[in-house]
Image 1 (cartoon, helix red, strand yellow):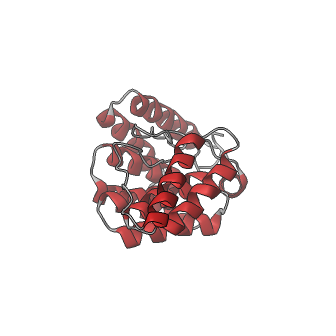
Image 2 (cartoon, rainbow, N blue to C red):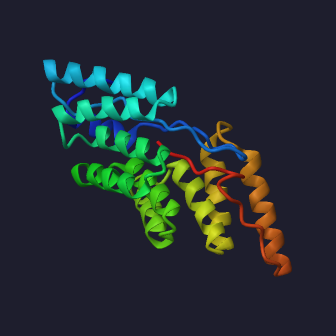
Length: 219
């Protein structure tokens, strides 16, 4: 979906389906950088696409410095491009520079207020910073824009477990299962529901899973 005008990009973001990456228990999720640009059909947009493609390839290979360089080259052409800023945020998340990642996700949202993927990623960054209220608000905003966004239900369920809200966590795990259509880690979600139900029934404290046991999911 390269080199599309801004209006088409917005429609794609609002209505396109989402793939699940890294939702499995026991591992950190993979990043899924955007391949889209809001630049118009010009020589500049062609250059931007080349930089974005190079950045995506370097990020997939684990070369964070190289990915940052390529995304920054794209950003030099279009500083306010929301997809490029989202990708830079993902790189800084992988680099564990969470406050810097927040600034790029927020910049992406400022330009494209309905960018639900950036809200999801912003929630992840806030969660890493232990800003749980802000994290919850970000996931909920992603779901306000796209209620059937399975990744945000997964991430919000994890956060709610961490903050001790078992009943709401169960609700979001259930919603995640209903939306995954066999593509996500449904077994893990069902196990979490069972554990939470057992804990609430027995009034025992539930074991809160960590990022090492189940990573949040990003796009």
